[in-house]
Amino acid sequence: MAEELLKLQNIYKNFGNVKVLKDVNIKINKGEVVALIGDNGAGKSTLIKVITGVHSPNSGKVFFKEQEVQIKSVAQSRKMGIEAVYQERALCDQQELYRNIFAGREITNSFGFLDIKKQRKEAEKILRDYIGFTSKAITVDSQVMGLSGGEKQGVAFGRSLYFNSDLIVLDEPTMGLSIQETEKVLNFVKGLKNENKSAIFIDHNIIHVYGAADRFIILDRGEVVGEFNKEDISREELVQKMIQLHESGKIKVED
Amino acid sequence: MNNLLNSYFVKTHKLEISITIIAVVLFLIYFLGAPHVFTRFPIYRAFMQSMPFFGIIAISATFVVTLGEIDLSFPSIVGITSLIFGIIMTSTDGNFFIAFILATSLGMFAGLVNGLLVTKIGIPSIVATIGTLFFWRGLVNVISQGSGIAIVDVADGTWHHMIFVEKLFGKIPMQFIWFIVLTGLMQWVYRYHKFGNHIHFVGDNKASAQMMGINVDNVKIIAFVQLGFFSALAGIFTMYEMLYFWPTQGEGLMLTTLAAVFVGGTSVFGGKGTIFGTFIGVLIIGSLESGIVALGLSGFYVKFINGLMITVAVTVYALIQRRKN
Image (cartoon, rainbow over all chains, first blue to last red; front, side, top):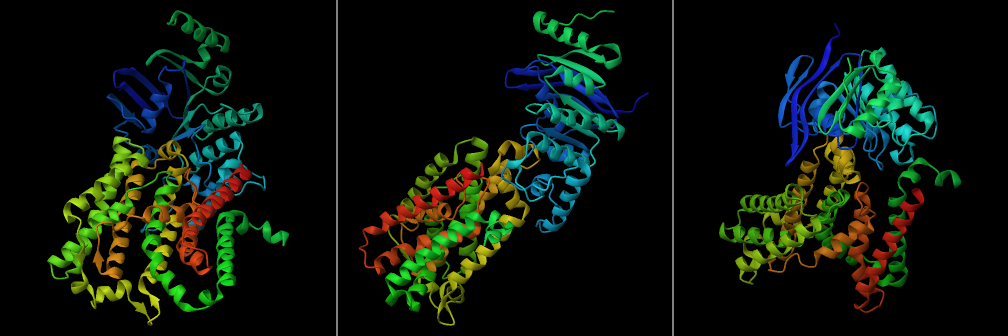
């Protein structure tokens, strides 16, 4: 029996009158990569924002490592070991890399002044050891502006590894990347499993999702409408299911 | 030479270097054009006397501008806090501590109101602070009924008067010493404190900052609060210098102060700025009037050349920025 890392129970989330999440139940085990798929507006982003503490659910329970928790802020979810990697908003463009890596959890003295030396040293380590940047053009003092999409993604990954998180949340990790860079990102996701870390990711591209994930959870208009293990479904069948969902609004469950 | 131009320091300090060159050129023009004035000490003493009043606010406003926000209400915050300072000083027979604490607290409260309007209600800062600009000035008029307050009896010759505005070694105005110290301190906070770091991230990209776990609203509120505090402080400095409160106190600070920030190279778009640049901006903007008159031009040129300086400076920065992208 796999060890449970995160469990969401009967999660509801409304924005005003709009019910974005309706009775969502999800479980993620240790060392498991789960893909969250569904159309725009299905509630995928909201769901992961509940997990990362950006939004609080209106009702429902969240369990992390079998303890009931209330994730009230990003800082708190990070502390627990949940790290988010957002494609577009992972980093701030005009700030140096070493500041980006530690943004929101700076290494400081007790008066709140930054330990710049230590931050730069640790950032150096992350670039070299975790991400494998060898290019001389990118240093810890580089502004993020000059980095490619894949490099930015790499920095965000490196950051999550450095902080030793248990669950990595990836929002559209391959959007806007070249084929080569996409490959790198997917390899990274696969590599997480070797370290017994878990990941949950959203991606529009089912081909990417299929290769990297162990399990697929399909969301539609705020509800979980299907859940499949990779052993039980081929890539073609998964694509078929999505098309079916798109056309008829429901998934046929066969036995 | 080429090596020097490509060095790390030069690359990362283009703005600071540009602004310093502009200032040096300007002072060279003064020096060559009016040597009888600029080779003697009194003009510099006059600068040191007058610049800190708006300089302190400009340094503090750099934080708000780096956020991509603006505060137009500080001239009125100067007004209301100076009024309170004057009232308490005269009614308590010169109790400096009570007057200082209440005036600066009121300044911080005014900043808090700005911050809450911007973050919790969601009013764009340019609109919210136009509202509070009128509100606080209106309150000054209502309370003071248009008359001034002399604090000369309770302030002149006291130790607080001495540490605020008297001359060190009979030459250097104390307010300038304070200005330098505060600039250094604020530079340190701006670059090396968690708060300064968060200011940069929020100004750069609010959504990213939020995702990284930075409390965006709190950072903005604190930025407005500290500007309220320093506006009050600048008002108190002015009171000691003049020994008098007048109901329009603070009016006329707005353009010089914000001009110093923008000429200093802090980006209106947020995320990038420099306290050192603002400091040099204060030297430039604060010296223009006397400089122009000393050069033999009539006072009518002051605004014109002020405008020219601002336009040229922000154009240079925009070009530097564009080349980067």
